[in-house]
Image (cartoon, rainbow, N blue to C red; front, side, top):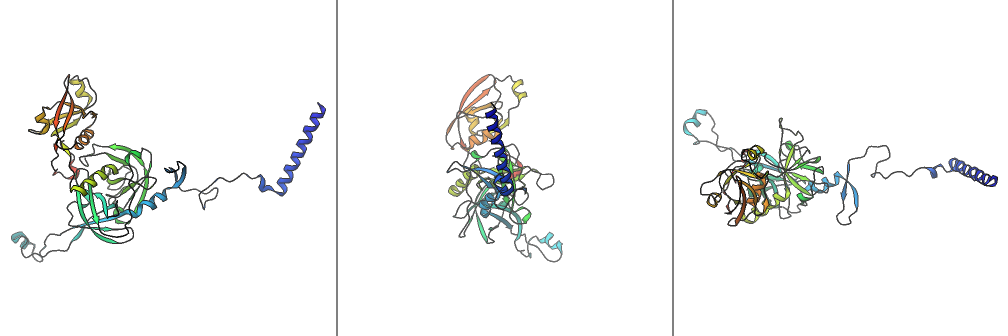
Length: 397
């Protein structure tokens, strides 16, 4: 026992002696390795926000700053300026205009009327923007990120989604990469890129606050991405991009009491914008299905009052006379629960589902009429062109 203790004490003495020698002559050998930090940053300095981006090719997760996403997407975001022909004006006595109208007047030059943003989505020069940015414009000018200014032509516009497609002729165009709504989740980091208040291209950051926002009265077909990234006047038609710099939405509206950003902005999902763009380029219009009903959200009071055996669906409050639904036998008070086997839980779902059906198709509509469950075949017609302006809300289906 004494021998073991002697060996232990000698080993401890040698270890302490070695440690003393290292601390005296080679202290750097005993320092802990420094954690990895971004280039140019040392310990104790604040670092820029970084996020984890999955590398699709290798499956390896790497650290990538938000600035990389901005640098990738920003060159494809442009400023859009619109103008309208000014009305004739008369010099001299204003009463001349009162009695003689436009005769003798002098045509004033075009004046800038509106400012917005756009996104280059094709090397051929196709751009996505908002309908309300270019609505009623006689002239459209696009300013690229490299300073070039070119005239743009309107390929087509869809007021019911507030999407418009422009075409420019220029070489060496930067093109943004299109993402997908299916890859976007609440809490994901996003960037809003545009030209707010005409101060120049601006990038703001935030997160996805919500998905599938509808019932806002901004357009007929609503499925908005909500974000707290700052969006201001002039950002309309600009890009909402994900952490990899892919386009996920077209910024279109904000909730504000002051006219500036309050952290509640809305963007049209890129999937919807792409569908509308393809139709406008191919056919010059968007063809949608229609069955001629006035829908309303189904509330619990209605379900309880009429003792319905369902809890989800869309209430039909009106049926257009001689419309497809009327001819098929749908009545006010019916509750649509399924269309072509697909559950319908909200007005926006009913609108989108019917719109996606090719006109002339016989669709099977499952409805609840009181205590009776029915299946009615409705021949879907072509949706009439809307004459309503964008912010007046939706309308019938």
